[in-house]
Every structure is written in structure tokens, then in C-alpha cells.
Length: 183
Image (cartoon, rainbow, N blue to C red; front, side, top):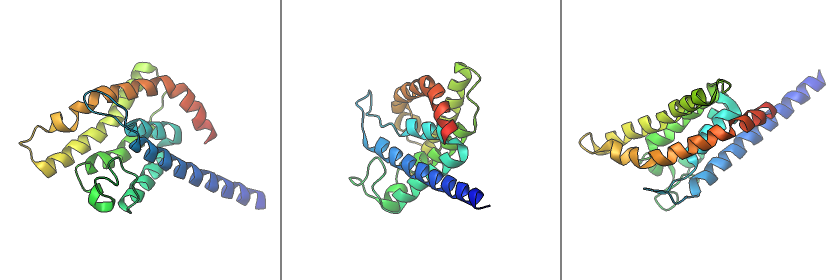
């Protein structure tokens, strides 16, 4: 009986450490800007999908939730913080829809089985990441209005970089699935 309890405690500690480490990786991905055309890219959406694939839907969702709670609580974890503000003020700004979309993207990326071939995997990743842009553009529309060119402002500049990140993930999926077995 004691051995079972100890294993459970070790599993809990392991999962907590994985979630905290995942949140840290997501924070780092938000701070590194890579020169890209037409706008610089961060690796946030890559890490969001990465977390879903490697941690699964539940732990991935927990990890992204921790990241969002840290940011809402005032820690400078988001891409534009602390330069553009921190906490709930920053969270409810133009990027809120994208940040909320991280939750949905992680959930779906973590729910899929990636053993059906590269085209199917590509479509699953496109489906997952699309929620980041759908929710992001919806919130942006709420803030600035329907009369503005929402797609041109909220998605189009990022699509080439997104394709690059998804192709990179496609190459890494076999390795990520091996990592997932140990988590």
C-alpha cells in the first residue's frame, strides 16, 4: 500500500514539474523574436502545439492555463510584456483572443493520434492552430470593429511563419511521440 502511494506522489511531482517546465518554455518562446517577413515571429504557437503533442490534451491544457494565469497575475510572461504592460490589462488587450486560442489549440493538438501519415498530421496541426487565429481575430474584431481589415491585420502577416512552424513540427512528430511515452 505504501509503494502505491509513493508512486502516486512521484507521478504527481513529475507532472507538476513537467507543467512548470512547459510554462517556462512557453514564456521563453514568447520572448525570442526571430526576424521573418513580413513581421518578426515568436515560437509561441510552435510551443503551444508542441506541448499538446508531447503532453497530451490534459497536461498540455494545464500547462497553457498556468502560463495564462502567470501572465494575468502580473508576471511578464507574454510576448509584449513588460514593455506594453502586464497583468490583466495586457491580457485583455488586442492579443487576448490569441492567448485564449492557445488553450483550444493545445487541447486539440493533444487529442489527436499522429500515426496516420504526414498529410493527416499536417491537417490536424492546421486545424489545431486555426483556433488561435479564429479566436484572435474574433477578439480583435470586438476591439476595433468589423469595418477594419481584420484578416489582413490579425492573421495574414503570420501565415508564412505559421506554415514554417507546422512543417518543423511535422519533422519532429516521431521524436515528440517518443518523448510523450516518458511523460
